[in-house]
Image 1 (cartoon, rainbow, N blue to C red):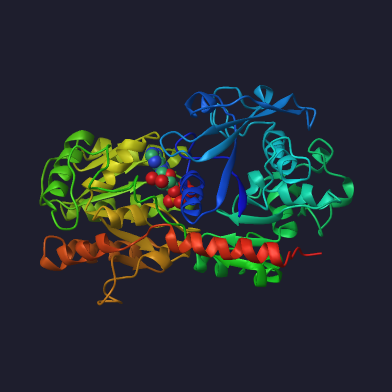
Image 2: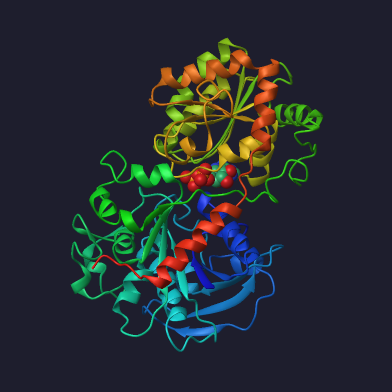
Amino acid sequence: MRVLMVASELFPLVKTGGLADVAGALPRALCRRGHDVRVLVPGYRGVLEAAEEPEAPIPLGDPLGAGPAELVPAKLPNLGTPIYVLRCPALYDRPGGPYLDPHGNDWTDNHLRFALMARAATILGVAGTPLGWAPQVIHAHDWQAGLVAAYLQLWGGARPATVFTIHNLHFAGRFHPVLMSAVGLPHSLFSPYGVELYGAISFLKGALYYSDRLTTVSPTYAREIQTSEYGEGLEGLLAARDPHLHGILNGIDDEIWNPATDPALSEHYDAQDMAGKERAKAALQQEVGLRVDPKAPVFGMVTRLTGQKGVDLVLANIPLLLQRGAQLVVLGSGAAAYELGLAEAMRQNPGQVAYRNGYDEPLSHRIMAGSDFVLVPSRFEPCGLTQMYAQRYGAIPIVRETGGLADTVHDCWAHPDHGTGYSFRDATDWAMGNAMWRGMESFGTPRHAQLRHRAMQRDFGWGPSAAKYEAVYDAALRAPARLL
Ligand code: ADP
């Protein structure tokens, strides 16, 4: 099958969260199953320089009147996945991140930056493609790629099937209705039966409405988003699309996330030989300024610091940790209140609390290796990756029972035969503290070592999920099913 993935992030070229990991790993897993999968990614500053083997660009003209655009065929560094880098210097060649300017504000032309990405994908998808390669399926990810199906809807001729994956329903890609023509959409589509969502254009809504198949990144989240608690006002539409909505768990890239070979670690280990993990813990404690003490349980957390991630619950439980002689290391950036709270906790508790503000891929690996427990107390979590990395690295996850966390971590008290972590239901300080307390109680006992061993044996590879995506592509090709 020929599949074009469309994503606004792609590991290792550009990453702010789990979407990049998925866009990097899923195509390789599908290629291993014999499919021809290529990825389209915007040519943000530095992306083209980091890509390998760039070929002659293919001009696309100026599809949205925002500046001339071209596609540069290239390969992902070290991994070899074929990619198309969408070059449009007027929209992408600037400092800052993929979504935010250097001051942390949304780029004011995000509607154009991501509409162009979707438009380029549809140019590849319809007859007469300038590449001589036409996908049978376009697989678009998150609101940034949301207009793919809406554009194809306007196309009269043969078109590829469309599959859309929700990585986070919270981000709907909302813009003022006056921008309809700027993004190349006729006003007829600004309707509840189109891209309109509570008076705004929503790229995400367009995708939910027009795509042949929808997926999201865990079975539990697929159910949760059909309820008013998690549905972000889209629960009715999602319930209507339920027959064509599938929850497929993300995998992890087990070549990149492997404690036996990880180049970010100075000490390597596996489930059979854990001496390296003890050394990795000491190395982490030293690196981040925690007291080097093998007996102190180390709690790690690597995350965007947003309300979603339950950072407030972690802050509230710092006294519990301190009282028990445990340590905390957090890596992440985001909301100022959390950054300040963590920095203050570190200032007041040197050697016991460490906070690193920023984005640091190698340190995130060392935190997984050096921690005894990894905290993921999210209020909602479509899938979550760090709880899976944690298990592979022998750090016991402590998670809230929601979304993909509920699907990938089973509490070891509730499931003594197969549990690999601690979980709690209510998003309260107390419930989280109780789960942490249970972890600390067993730390240092044979029971903890057994739990760690079991967690490290779990297979979170992409194989089974890639097979499920393949089945969804097949179904989309055989029975296109938009909501019309
Ligand atoms: P989300 O996509 O909601 O941010 P996920 O758990 O699905 O959450 O994925 C987060 C990914 O981003 C993981 O690979 C995690 O290790 C990484 N990550 C998050 N914050 C940082 C950071 N500050 N430094 C390095 N990696 C980070």
